[in-house]
Amino acid sequence: MSNTPIIYAHRGCWYESDLPNNLNNIQKLLQKSHERLKIEIDVWYDPSLHQWRIGHDYEPSQPFNILDIASHAGKFLLHCKNIPAFEHAHQLRHQLGLQFDYFMHDADPIGITNNGLVICNYNVLFPHPWAVFHPNKTMNQKEKQQFLIAQQPYGILTNEAGEWYRHVHGV
Image (cartoon, rainbow, N blue to C red; front, side):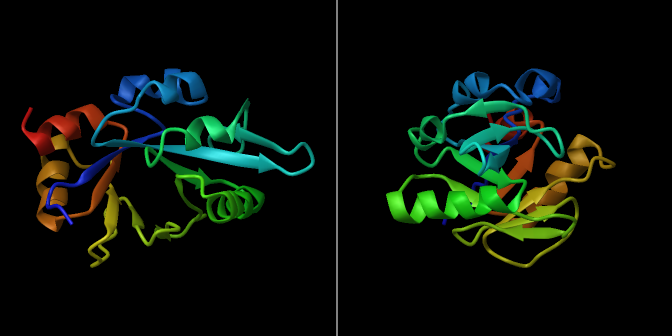
């Protein structure tokens, strides 16, 4: 395992200002592929329509084809927002071998992905070599960077992926 954390773009945000434009736009998210950048997206599955939808919290909006995401092997982390999404993601990954990672949590401070990554909300410290931290918004950027890099996490899930990428990789 590398000491350089993987940067996860929360809902595809390279910068915080991207959030309104990327939130439910699967085409823009598919364009955000980057060598060390992975994209976390909120997904829902409607079993009555056999349809995947992208959308945050209680607003599943745009339908999308899960095969579009699977064709970008290993670039997406699906945050399953309902149980059918988690079940269907599990089935597609294991029965068809589609390449994406997924997790589900509600109000829990941590979530665990299908491959054992631990997603930690905000400043919850979880002593695990595969932790992915989602930094607290009350810290300024320099405090976040110092705090998280000191933890030596596997990854960082953030709305400021561009800033974190430059900081972590020195570019």
